[in-house]
Amino acid sequence: FKQRHQASRGSGGPPIRTQLKMLLLRLCLTAAGTAGLRINKYQKPVLFASTYNDAISDAPVAIETNKNDWETKYRVLTPVTLDNRKEEYTRFDKYKSKYMGRYNSVDQSKTDMSYADFGALVAAQEYSFKNGDILTGTVVQYDGPQKAMVEVGAKTAAVLPLREATIVPLSDGETISDFVDVGEQYEFQIVSDSRDDGQVTVSIKKIMYAKAWDKLATQYAEDPVFEAEIVQVNRGGAIVLVEGLRAFLPGSHIMGSGGASDAMVGKRIALKFLEVNKEANKLVVSNRRAVIEHSMASIKRGDVYDGIITAVKPYGAFVEIMGMSGLLHISQISYDRVENLEATLAAGMVIKCMVIDHDKAAGRIALSTKTLEPEPGDMLRDTERVFALADETAAKYHARVEAERIAREQAANEMVLSLGDSLSPLDELGATNALGAE
Image (cartoon, rainbow, N blue to C red; front, side, top):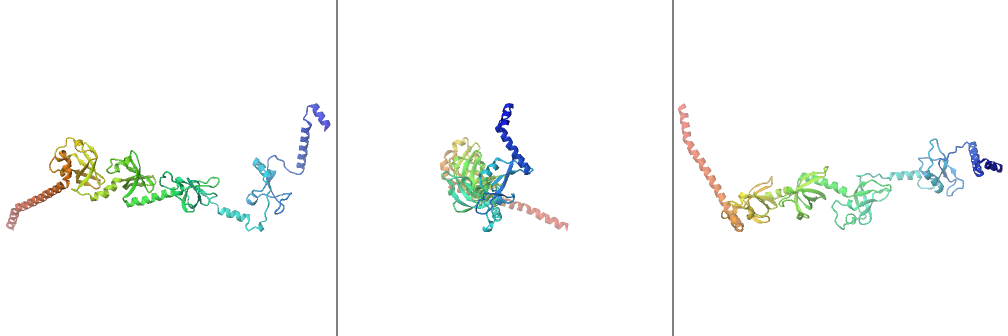
């Protein structure tokens, strides 16, 4: 070696240490070739087991790996040569074989359950959750004011957020404990797939939402009158809550208010359904239909009602009576000509008026005040006198109308009798002609 070292230094070759390393490597390669082994820097692990139970042997014995045998799946691995596919021996495999330690084999004859039985039991208890699945779970604890933990049989407890606990809009200060109780069972719907740790998000709101639509579909077929609270108004109408669902109330279907206003928020009104469509997520209701069908049955022609003027137009005034809107036409205000309507009537004014006609199907009501005038033109001169004597004047009006009706009937009867008398000579002439013909 010394001579080589000197020769290499003189010839400019590699240092002696490098040459020694190369020589040792050649010796190792020669020995490996003699033993019939294949050397590759990429090596994959092999499993080792102890030579006896309840102790760690200093001389581990290599055992064959079985991909389907989960008993040995996680035992310590050590490098061996690669197979024909030349799979890479990863850094993870390297550190795993170096630091995890060795596995103690267990005598399964001394245990109550084998590895295979335990594996089958775990597989039988494994759950698979998908969005939309409905299951029963138990609330196990509250995780702060905004969510609860629910046991549904997953790897970890499921999460119930506060926003998914109820279909009703949340108020300030409400917590998850206001809607679910620890230890109680509820139906939940999966609303998110499980994460890597097996945790899923569940909802009660989704189930309540589906049940509410089914209930409304049944009520729509029955067509009842119901009450609901107005929670919001907008330019087109109002929003009401029906079984927890938001329904649209068009402004044209709000009776006696001239449309939606902020003063209506929080008020409960009578409603009927116009449209219930779950697929289109469309729910439309009407206050006009409910009021008309409920109140129109009690309205009669000729009756006097108290009303409030809601709007004054050039052609007349709109008056709210019994929750319905009627039209007091300008020609029905007074027997005298009305030159200035706004000087006679104003919005918000309380009046008495008589129903002279109504259309129950369309919800239209025709009103009159001139029929209540003691003297023609009193509505233009003294409205208070007209309203004070309204009932008395209405009674006189009905008596006059009845007298006119009786007079018309008598006139009609007399006309029929006179026609009968005029036809009798013709009947006698006809009979004489018949006898002559015979």
